[in-house]
Image (cartoon, rainbow, N blue to C red; front, side, top):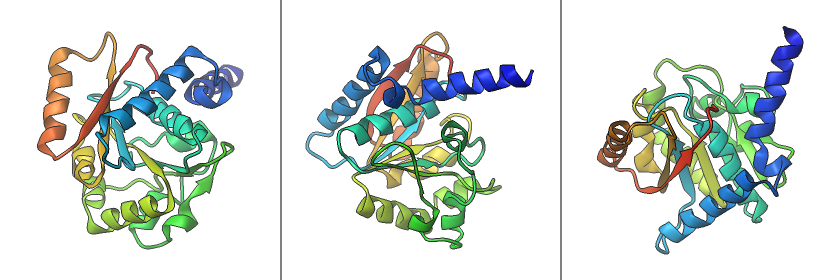
Length: 222
């Protein structure tokens, strides 16, 4: 049982870090194309802070956020990857790091942003984990302090990629999107219906999001 769990964990980590571990793979090339398309879609505007979300849980948004961030770092940009999913944080597991201290510590004023940031094995890519679970997570993401954190992150990094909860599952993401430059919506092939995709798009736009692109994920990954 332990060996089987370890095997699954290695498989998930390998897939989640695909752009780093297998840069020549077709999936890695697709993330580089997505990276470039986001810039093309910006129409000359600066897209420094990017939210990655999906209509429902289990669509693969965390994996997509990681690989998108890696592809940006590979271009020579300094990138901060942020786990803003207080309800079901995942990034610390994918990188084998501690969950806390993290974003919640910074928002609570316990640490500065740079004191909470962790370096990863990937050059030019840093990680800000979620920190401890927060009951009022949507209020924290909607706070003026969160706006200050994003401004500080934008000043220190070329790109800030934020992994957020599914937009139709919790109010957290909609509390954050109007503070960021762009949103990438992940849709899962065979699962996300046209109605749910449209509902997610409308919810994001109503919250003031600038949707810069969508990713169609064919695999059932977190």
